[in-house]
Length: 529
Image (tube, rainbow, N blue to C red; front, side, top):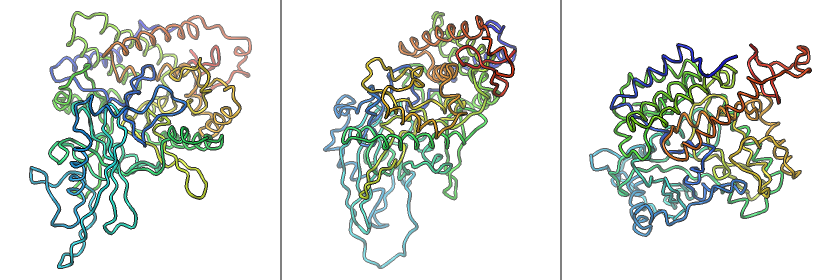
């Protein structure tokens, strides 16, 4: 019987290598960019940015639009003054004529503007100056959100866009937001916003990095549910579309887990690469400098370990986090010792086949109702118009791409229901219309997908993955680690150590098999020894 004390030599080598690499002064690199990869066990996602396009689900009560007082709390320019700066930015990006085209302070054109080919030069009369309507929208902790409407000036219809401005520049990585949006548009047919313009510097009229993207039609599912009574068929439509989106993402694979980065080629096309997940201590305002100091060799070493297996990915991450803990607090044995215990748990999970098949898929880690856009066209139909918040999209083990969106079928008036507790995802809803919604999703994604969605060992694997991303950087993370270790110990004891096959399972002809796995107690699957 496997135990956590027996970590094989290849694992120890990877763990030690990551730990050794991390102890240099330049070793600290951070959790994914906008802090949008969230632990399902903590309530950090309540701090995500929300606009009219970014509200939360009526069935996800912990996610609420952020108050406009965020502007005051973050000591930002009042909207009246800021709207003037935004309008000036718009005239810089979209001038009425080539004579108006401006540059930033370095003499270079503003980055990332999507420009059409120049029209014929000439002695033609300049078109009228474009007008822009600037709309105040509800933002969030991480981003200030402003609506922009380009009015007339030769356009057959007004063009609506969204401006996203980070509230805390030291925490933001808008370049990754742009990379993911472009990657998804290039590799899938999933409806997502198109990046219209961006600048990663503060050398512009709003004196801050920003991203401008097209505004998807309609409103968020949360807003729609508040504004009108959605029918069961409306919810089933959403469930099917989210299921198709998850399957589409699952078809995009990569040899390693990691973050998506991009560069623009000379011909204007975009090239993409996957880099290791970032590591940082809590509230480290210098993390960007440390990321820049990480050598190409260090990144390549991490990716080589990532590629070997999901277990080696986890070993590498925990080794890197342990190095950060040792540098931060050498005497804090309790804290960095957690990384040893997590590694023991990961080794046990691998030996009983709880880490999947080492496939890495593209996963949107925040498919919430606030990020699902819906519309009601004039013809009386209903459709899902797009998915938002791609900041949290990463390449991750397959089990991460199968997290069930059970907020769709949750009995919202059930006071006992905990939306963060995935163990309730496969419970049969008490209301018939919620049962229909659950059935619509399950029929869309199929059995193989649901195998990773509902089995308790994969719920635990998802929790471990989140810990590997966030580390032990605060009280919530510490509580999450302790809870995971206790839950895994209980599962391992019940399903492996104390497992006694039932009479039915002892009959080989009646025992279901799947890819070398056999059913254990409660329908869980463990590796046959």
